[in-house]
Image (cartoon, rainbow, N blue to C red; front, side, top):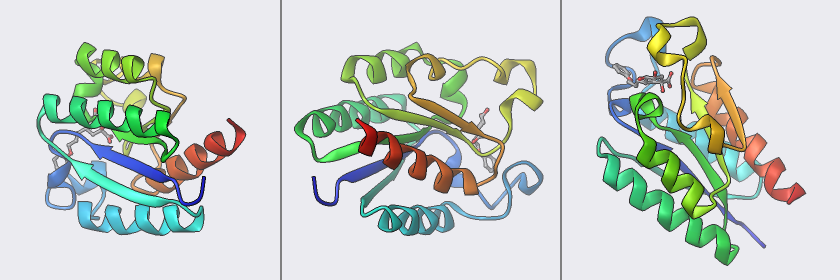
Length: 153
Ligand code: CA2
């Protein structure tokens, strides 16, 4: 499949990146992250679809859409930073599983070195891989990992 799409899906509050909590999430904005992702996708011959929503249902719809595109052969998979929904959302777990989406779970911070309520993820059991703690460079790592998984499939 020439130039498959990679979806990078960002959940709640990630639109605030770069404006607050730079000690935890760094100084780069979501627009900066989008540029990083575009470069990483181009390096792997893929096309970026970059999204952010603060609404669980919008994220679920995007996952369903991505699952259908993956089944049709036009999408390699998705990098998902579900934000705090990672720790709460059975609905996102069910959406990824139901859509049979190849997903890499991504966190900017090392969630395991933070509060106990961030140690459990509803996404991990349905993710192909997990990356956490590398700052926004983790998006590049996740895209590389997803491209490798896609090539190996
Ligand atoms: O480390 C990550 O990427 C997280 O997914 C970020 C979520 C957090 O709830 C997860 O436990 C770990 C929070 C995203 C909110 O991002 C902000 C960025 C700047 C200022 C305020 C929030």
